[in-house]
Length: 265
Ligand SMILES: NC(=O)c1ccc[n+]([C@@H]2O[C@H](COP(=O)([O-])OP(=O)(O)OC[C@H]3O[C@@H](n4cnc5c(N)ncnc54)[C@H](O)[C@@H]3O)[C@@H](O)[C@H]2O)c1
Figure 1: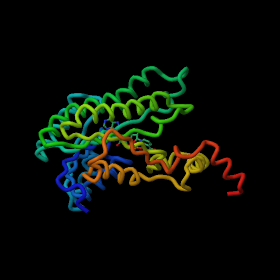
Figure 2: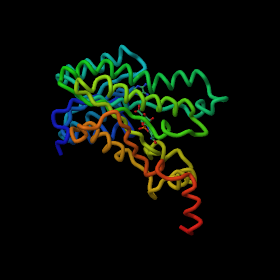
Figure 3: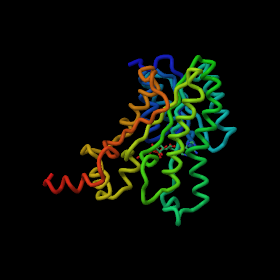
Figure 4: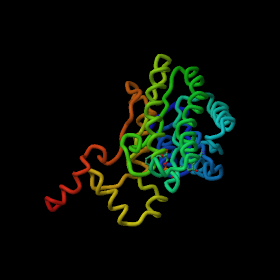
């Protein structure tokens, strides 16, 4: 409790999945949270539930692709909380039906994915940093992905965009560290948000689990707890880093699952 006392948090993409869990956990730790999402009513619903639990939250609609809307979101947080100490650039993704391998990917989707994952992070961070400097420092938490660390057979744009988010995290940490601003990223592995779990065939889910070192699948809260840590002063000596939370997927050799079965495990 109260690990985020005094923190004034803006989190985008917070009406569902990982972002929603992170917003709930941050509010439970004492932060004031601006829950921002494309789906305004869902953002308001999430904020209402947080308030009902006795914590502080405000829900707002925002399209992170729209610079003016992002500016309004930042202004709203300052008006509601009297400043901003923490920004979680959480929105991201790509359309796996259009974001294929290099030769087959849709170039318009490439541009959209770069804007959704990378440009949105640039835009919101530029608008929030002056407020963080005014507050005496702050923490930016970007959501990357293990897709930004490894090659894959599909989603060339998504992986490239998340790699850019990881490098951008280092640039922000470098350029504003002297003004007390930390910037870190979290890189989730496969996370079973309800939407994903309900839409994937059982054998695909089993295949994902087999690729992990741990014999389990991650939940939205597993990433939310990492985001709480990066938002809190417990990580005050950490900046420019990417915290990988992936069930050990990127720790093990691609051969490990097959070799486990050679042992009969
Ligand atoms: N779920 C996973 O397995 C996984 C793995 C690695 C990384 N990630 C990353 O985590 C983040 C969220 O993933 P999730 O699985 O929780 O997604 P999700 O689909 O459950 O939630 C995404 C939220 O973002 C909102 N959103 C979408 N476009 C937006 C826009 N333009 N402006 C504002 N809000 C917008 C949606 O309305 C939704 O509420 C993304 O950056 C994603 O790349 C997820």
